[in-house]
Image 1: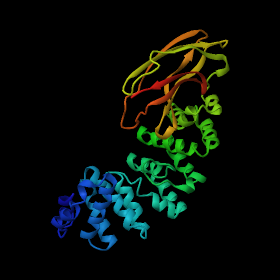
Image 2: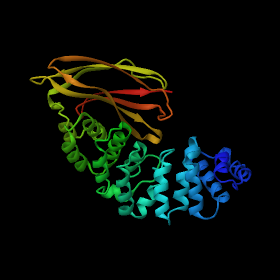
Image 3: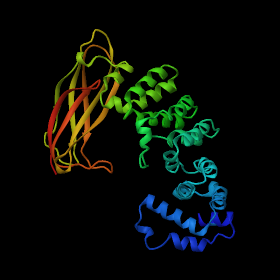
Image 4: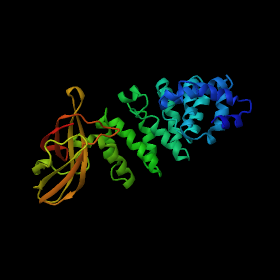
Length: 344
């Protein structure tokens, strides 16, 4: 990064920049803290004028690689909030080489209408990375980023952008549209279900968006979401003979469970089959997580189902000893359960 900035701005003091970045604190910093620290060091070595500095960074952007490239939109977030006319186009450029989805959010919070008018223009850009940014940057609950409280309350300004992108040729863009709608569904399920009903059936691509957008509602067993996708009446489907091979597994072990799915409908019906694990957590709390088994059309009959679940620790989930429950869920409704005692 120092070499690129030196190439783009010959008076850039790359030795001073490296000394500032690689100080005694750098090795102990986590990723986002390293990014912010590096951004602050860039500021100290580039010209004090934001206009001149951002012009240099725009010139350097195509050659700055890896996580270092995140410093470019971060620079705009930190030092460009008073110069929208330069900052917003810079973010649109920088997102092609890293991602500006975090950096745009303070601008949206400062002036939602102005920022979203800009994002709507980006939804028509020829570069799919820029079009994705138009959706991803305004997600109300973007992971690892600051939330946008106004959009949790009222996502109306987001919808024109998503309408413009729903038929995008890029799956990368369409996935962002679905994720944005999934965020919205957590606060406004009725809005997303109504939009889903409007979009469903237009094309295989929009059908996928609607299904992915409703994934949280489906996992919660929302009956309206189940009806939207044509799942059968769970009252006529039963789970029988649920068995678990280990009642007292140890952390790190795998359990195997089996049951009979009894479909008592008059004709074949669509079945979304899941299992939930109620995990014992620290300090006596319980956390429920739903896992998908299958989703298919089942004829009226008894169907044998066998599934395995691992209690091995992962980077995203740590296990604790105590009472756990495995629960079988059919079309959003819990049908049977078995208790386990997880040991160390």
